[in-house]
Length: 298
Image (cartoon, rainbow, N blue to C red; front, side, top):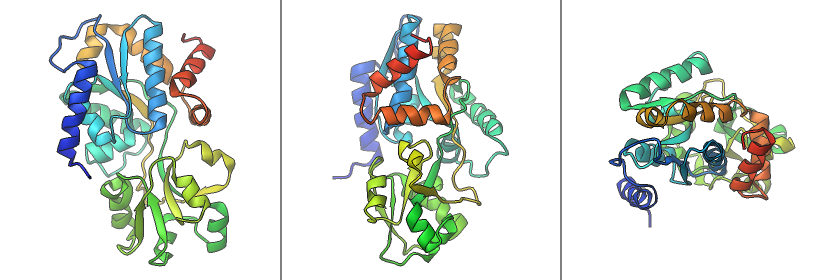
């Protein structure tokens, strides 16, 4: 059974309230910082990194993982059920603030997103060098054989050939909406849901011709896949930055931001690909612990 967004939000609110309190609680230095994450593994690793770094500095923190897609996670933030989550700036602009004209640089995107969040009572802390972008990929061998190296080439797919995408992909501009608007992707193209993590087996077994991926996926390091060119800019750069309540920042003092920024300063694309690879055999908690210890933050 498919729940409505409103129903899911209510369920999330109940779950978060039971484990982390409500937004009506007074914020003060001894109140835990409630960190949330969206529903994929990398974001959970980021949540663990920020949580454990805060605890190492004596700042209490709670982590609520896999709240749902961004649309649900930001509602939990706006509703006061969490205090922060690791955000991807490009998607924050396009899917939450509906800004689809891309700023001229990642820094301009960051400054615009921060400006748009200020009146809502939130801000972005330092932006990382890590940019995990949405993309479409094909098996390199398939792309070479069929001359598919850009998104525009998908218009040549036959009606029975499939493109595998994450469940939220069809409703997003950084998804099917943008592909149809900017590339004229045909309505007859067969789009199928593929949960995050399953897209590479689907490509390997030729069950889909192309699939939505994240550019920090560990599988891309194998060299077996080709990211399709996106000259029209459906997919934005997506540098990570903690999106956090300004009230919580004020309540906990400067050490809160300094600690979170110290973690962010270490995060790059190669670092995140390595952490994602380790999470294939270890828990996000263990991956974050080892990384922070190796870098002197625990």
